[in-house]
Length: 349
Image 1 (cartoon, helix red, strand yellow):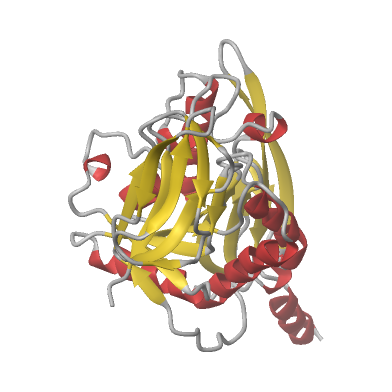
Image 2: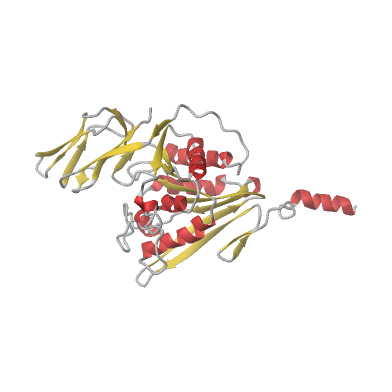
């Protein structure tokens, strides 16, 4: 009888099988469970919170950090995070998922594209942040230390912000001096199952050099030696259920790729890699008229849009700087001097 009881405990107890509890900010997450936190962040002038969910599996495995809502007007990944609350089953998970539901709650609640209205800073330009900086810098510091710093792999989820018509793609970080980490990041990106994959080539980039700001959330993860990738899926700050599902399903596929979830990945369709991108910015403030949409294929020199003044006079004609796929194009009329009008992915084929 004693042997039968011991065998039963071994079969049902994740702790006895080798998976210990996960500790986060002094709180314990038991194997096979999930917990929610609302983390307060305060500066001398402002205060906010960061909603976080941790899923801790019954078996050992990677720690996957995921951020949504670094830009709070990018709703598709935020809503995908809400779906993942129910879709990730910690009882069937190997390893741990740390999911930041909305990194930039000030931007989200304030319906503010790009920047946190509390301090007018872009969260995705201040990493690794500062413990004694402005509210946005403190958010970045918390994510850098308590999320990225606890992870072994990392995903930052974005979409087209309020004015951006964007085609769905993923991107991963590549560096000639970090071949193994780059290889794993590429495998994660490919596993998501998207048609278009951006290679963030960073070998000669200053922002990854020691002593420099990494600026971007996922770049901070890569700088720390983590395989890192981005989702870009959704457009114009609108809710489209099929794109929310595309993000959710992509994350689930990555869990399978990392052996954190059971399942087999079907073969992805032919995927197009973009090692380079080209942009055109506005020389004026005025009104933009796009002649193409995201996902269109354009050839170098093709007329893709124009800018007028506020009386309809053409003041800038916009032409494709390279041949490739339109990754994003400004999808709303207002344009300021220096704003990007179009981004084109240049294929490696």
